[in-house]
Structures are given as C-alpha cells and as structure tokens.
Image (cartoon, rainbow over all chains, first blue to last red; front, side, top):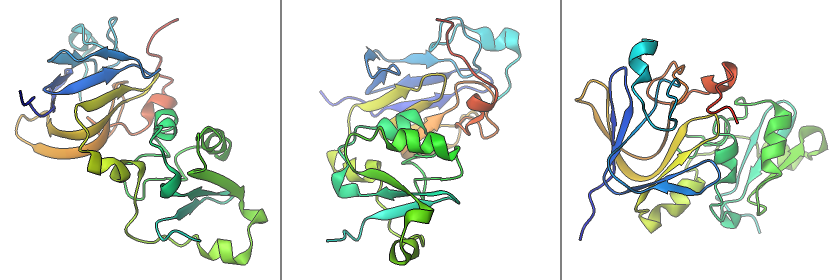
Length: 63
Length: 164
C-alpha cells in the first residue's frame, strides 16, 4: 500500500502537526514513533516534550 | 586528484574542507550544529554560525574525512585561493536525494530544533501556504524570529528541553 507523503502543518500560536509517512527520532537517533498524526510542541513550554500538552495557550505563545 | 565538488569555507581563523565523495551521511555535523552545518541552505556551511572552537569540535567528530579543518595561518597560497565560493554546491542532503528518502526522518535535536529530512510538504500557520521541501529545521524553543523555522535562538535563550 502506498503511504501518504509526510505533511507538516504549522498551527498558528500552537503545535506542529506531522502526518503521513514519517519516523520520529530522539536526539540519540532512537526511533520514538511512526504513528500518524502527532503534535509536537513549538512554544517550548510543554511538560510532555517533544509532544504538545496545550501549554501554548496558558503561555500566550505567539508564533 | 581534486574532486570538482570539493568546497571550503572560511572565517578569520580557520577553513573547513568539505569532500562530498567521503560523506557517509552520518548526519553528525548537523545534529550537533545546525547553525553552521545546514544542508537545507546554500551555502550549506555558515562559518559565522558558531564560535571557531565549537566548529572545530564538530568537524573533529565527522566519522570520515568528509569534513576537515585547518588554521588559515597554516594554509599555503594555493589553498587560500580556493576559499572563493563557487556555485553548484552538493551537500550531505543532495548526495542522498537519489535515495528518494521515505519515510521522512524527523530528528529531535537535544535542546534544539526539529530537523526534517526527506520529501515532504509544509503548510504554513495561515493554512494556505504550501511548500514542498527536502530539508528544514523547525523551532522548538518558541523564541525564533523566523517562525516556524529555527534561527539558532534556542542557544541564546538557553532552551532546556527536560530537566534530567
């Protein structure tokens, strides 16, 4: 089956959504997940990094 | 014999030599120092992106001799003349393009950005702009001035991902 091309969607003042055919690796090069979609923290404030936990709202993140 | 794809990059102190034929895509350089070694940019090596000692440290970690360095004061005239920037630069990324890399690799840099390699699309925060890309780095510290992309701000603000 043909996998869907990876897509990175930037949410205004929010996270980065990744969907399609991708692999997420940690800084040691170990695979974390292939599951789609995922939402990665962009504001730097999530307590669940690298994933978004909604902290961008309380932090008033703009970007 | 000299490979026409070879390049060199210089600042006031040192010159970094890039030999694509020796690159094995270990990705050490841009995992460690995306501010200097960014295959998504041209030229892909930015010698102003970090202090000289840090550049030396990362070049020394290259597992092959694809990246090497020398003090400018130790270079001869012929080598110094090669410091002129030439076009048609290959990077670790373009070398790999024939592989049509799938799935796309999403790499989390420690206390740094999300570096993406492969063939992918980016939809902007306005919901409309769509770009096809082969390599980029997304900001993760919240402080970049060129959102959504990394501009190296994470180092300035001392972004720490986790306390451990």
